[in-house]
Length: 192
Ligand code: GLN
Image (tube, rainbow, N blue to C red; front, side, top):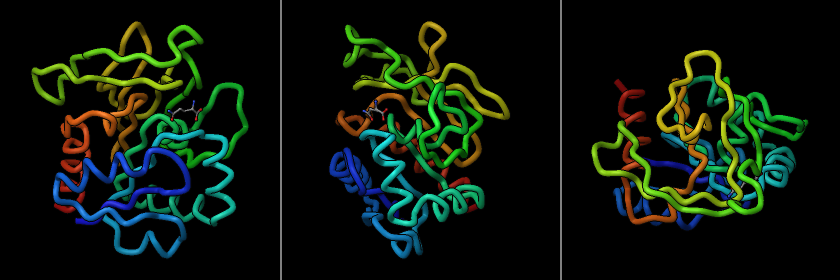
């Protein structure tokens, strides 16, 4: 199985480390040709305005959006969640616009710019997941068939819609592989 990792900027190595532990090949995606033959794609954290501009410059924005519309499983963390969203509050920045979500960027304010907490996430089983937030966005409203997987005080922090998965936190910064395994389970559904 091959999961491409968008490697324009951000936490690429950390995702690779977790996926390699799960026995997955992880080609870097830097050019449209790198999308050939991948079974899924990870959009890592970084800075979403910058990554959006780089996606345009490297001719990746439309090819990735097109593959997503055709059913390619895509998992976005943090910046990736922002790029997956159709609506970004008060921003015209570039995006893939694949999920029916409204996103608020840098939404936790200065005091809480970065924080960690153990959160119960029912789809991952009974043990809480150690969530790490870094200048995180959250989803403030959803449409379509978006399914909420974690919310806290009305802020949606983990959600899925069809072949898309989006997390406001950084599972790649933990040693817990459950979120990535959940993403891989979406792939096997796609292949049936
Ligand atoms: N605040 C960043 C943005 O708007 C996201 C931060 C992250 O990916 N850790 O893109």
